[in-house]
Length: 334
Image (cartoon, rainbow, N blue to C red; front, side, top):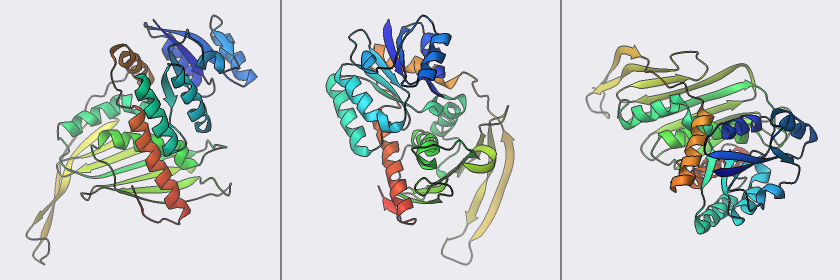
């Protein structure tokens, strides 16, 4: 039985607690939060679980095997470092850390102690992303041309991070997981309408070495909520609408074919327009699948797909995005 301590019982915390309680190989030993109202909610929901406002009761307890950190990113490094130093595996909310150096230090510490780090990139465990990964690996789409993602809605404004740090980790982690290549450069633009330092609208472009391009639009000021990703390949094109009640993924047998030499006036373009089909997508709760996977990685000594290295790659892209934003859209090489 793996004993788990959970730090943070805000927006996401109750979902995390519920899924760890529901796992047959875990016992939630304690819940921590600094906010009195949050602890009151935790006590009402889980009267049999110890609650505390002192995170050291969890971080340093010899009776706890894994620590779940569901707190603002500014606190991640210090909490995770103490947990790892005290021999705990960690499950940590996205983004992994607030800087590259912090992520690298935590990875090195976990490696020394043979501990697992899992970054909560929940979308990787949705039926949609798992199906898209399968389609890409089976070469259904062919060579990829572009990855285009829109994640916009009205709010929720954050007090400590801009829209890039809040929303883009979802899309960057999905892109990083689906595309087995690393971007070589990032360019970003955005603006802050209500806070001089926290952008609420941003556009991120990522360049790869082989003409593959990715674009991510994140926005807290949209009148409508959109969660749509388009992935184009030379064989097929895919649209994923995460808000659709059914047929979340649609695959289009559409594309462009050229005839003749590119450099000549004789080049001709023809458009291919074939069938559309919607593959079956599993409907399991992504967080439950992720928690099951985390426990399996601990028990069997596996390295998670969303480990510290994956978290580091996202933090590196986030930092480069912010650098480009602050330099007026300058291209930043990774």
